[in-house]
Length: 430
Image 1 (cartoon, rainbow, N blue to C red):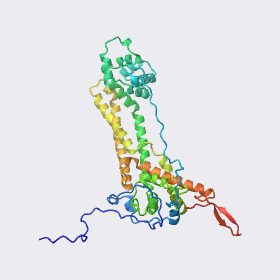
Image 2 (cartoon, one colour):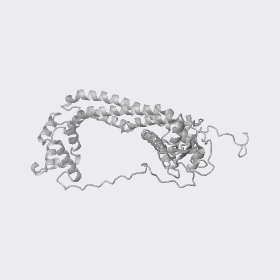
Image 3 (tube, rainbow, N blue to C red):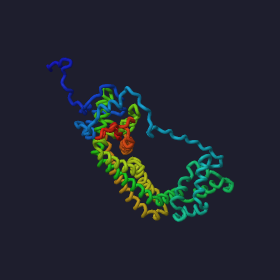
Image 4 (tube, rainbow, N blue to C red):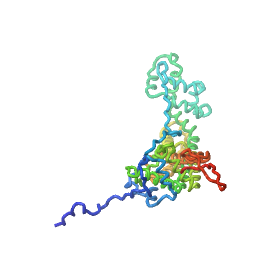
């Protein structure tokens, strides 16, 4: 028979237990209650699954000499923190007023009527010129901007049915209805306009996407090169945050969400309104000024990154590639297909190359996402930029306070000269 189970409390280690990072304890703990840092603590078991910045920092200690007594004094719970005084406070978005609907007409009604008539007016040419240009595929008359306007107001399916069902005099219709009644009788008018628009705008779209690919590739590479400085600052923040969060659920964090750092470092304030980020920046300025300088350069570089994100870029490439494939399909058996054949072949090559480049950028982003362990991959660059910008601005604030000749707490520093006289000299309390 199998041996009896061990007595309660004597069981051995659980087989195949999932590994987890050790809780990170600060080098010192506060003697009194301190303000809590409201960061988002990451699960230790999750951090142990694969290589990431927090796992690499597991057994390391910050090289920045921390003034723990000053940290505890500044962020003691005995004092009431001042409210936010910086532009970090949230701003309400202005409300948008609804526009009133226009008067009803025969086919196009309400806002649709307004947009159709504005679109036709923006074309700036007569109905006869538009019809002739669509039939003749004339890019001199219908340039990219006019094609965008025309394509944006093409009649919807129900509007086409209503126009085709109309059996009265065309002259009795409004001007827009008269124009579209003529346009829908042009053979394959919708395919013609769509093909012309794609050809007219393709070069600029490809150029814009290439610039976004190059910009995001450069930005991701810059962040990857700054990994050493970012890791060192994160290690310092872990020590400071775990010190203040000692004996709380948020304490002993082995890693935190990058996206929570801007809020938590800006909202944790001392009694005189100094932010925790300013304290961290002051500690770095005293012992590691070169690191702050390099992070300032990174922040400047991040300002130049494209306004789009990697996911939006990849989706735009897929959409453009789909439009090219759709054009190929739509042009089959069209009598004017030969007019777009060479363009279609070129567009297929260009979009294939763009697709490959965008996939490489996505792979670089995924590497960054895994390294910093985030649940918001599309926001990783924005989160890092916001955190670095906050740190750089905090350093500037600390430097301004120092230059004013007072400590961050508002007190001038007294220094005795060799002649026994006293003088005030600027200094930072951190």
